[in-house]
Image (tube, rainbow, N blue to C red; front, top):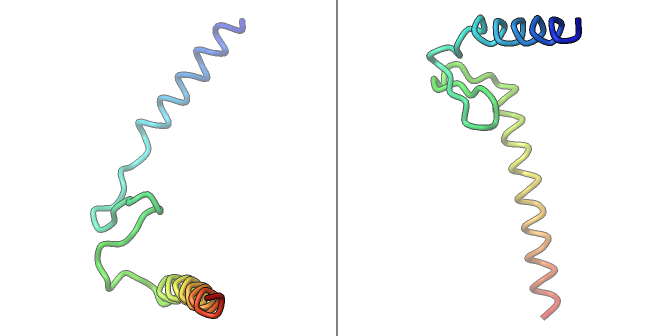
Length: 72
């Protein structure tokens, strides 16, 4: 009984993997998730999220440089 349940579960798992459609041709998976290749497909929300992330990084770097300069 347990063996047949394991076989059925494995069959469903493999079947689901083969039935999953491939990613769209206009996107690429670069490790951060599906990223549109076409810049026209990028939404304003995505642009804002990326730019705010870099603003935080730049603020931290400026603060570290100020602390380093004043420490000497």
